[in-house]
Length: 478
Image (cartoon, rainbow, N blue to C red; front, side, top):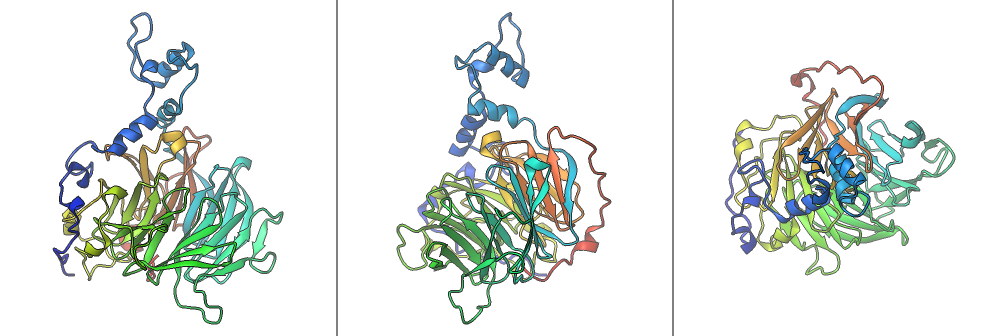
């Protein structure tokens, strides 16, 4: 295997010439992220100073939950209640690290899993054509057991509509299917017990173009779908008109991940195997297929993106075994960026990441921070910001091919928790939007729940097979 091939052609935009701490990441050259997002995180998750001052009687206590409750009862803040930041400070201290408790286990690999927006439902998609929707409030009872239609290889992605009435699912096909999950029937077999309508992203009803959908997301208003595909393109599908409204030849390789930047739907983020994250503004396309900007810094392909929801910040998981934090105000001009530092002989699907490559840095890294510890191998591992309501988004978390879930402090970059139980790669995981609970889904077929404090008897950790026995998982880039 050859070494990393270095190409010095990078981004010559002025924004990348000015060196700053932020471009190096919190766990490389400093113990603290020195950027506006650090202050925003502090505002969302630090308590009011009036609640943490010394209590009467010269009793000097640490900033603890007990002290804050005492100050609230004494109405030190003058509000008589906790603010959202006060609540986040309390809730974010209690990480969901106890357990796990098994939710379910199937005989096929779990690829995707997510809580609904309000946390009442949980969706899990498996390679064996099954999608299960669990009612969280009713003891994780299976509310809908969906047998997918026209599946190619696996369920690559699912997404629940904002009104939680419909679910779309994708596979390595240009057809994305939609299911009405509000129907009374528990079993939903495609076009047998219920109709699973198909949206053709190829735009050609006569021919089934040979490309697949890696990522699909609803817009906030539920009227559109955005999708990333194996033909290097981004698609926007108008559900009311039942047709593609936009196709962008976005990247030079597979578009593994896409998402809307915020609730307006104007900005779209995309990540590709060409190592680049791109920002697309549908209001002002300068030219056909030209991005509003490019974010350079990963040394290998992008596996997943998650938006902070503010149209400004996002994180990405890369096959260079890092998660990166980005501010789109630091993006470069599309015309000046080229792919750099790629090892053409290395393949993440069945090879370990070269040890010498772990110390390499992109010469034009525009990211604010870099987080290391988890591994992005075998499959497209997903990462997320922690919930705003309960944590103020002060953490980021990611699945890992070493069978664990990692939680990092956004500002310090420190690994604050590692959830270790599964026997296969944890491709996806989801933090409950309201409560300290994380659910992990793995290629071992297990859906596991981690909580604070947790109730009942936890599962006994499974005995690990050695890495050498599980390196050859698939020859498909998923």
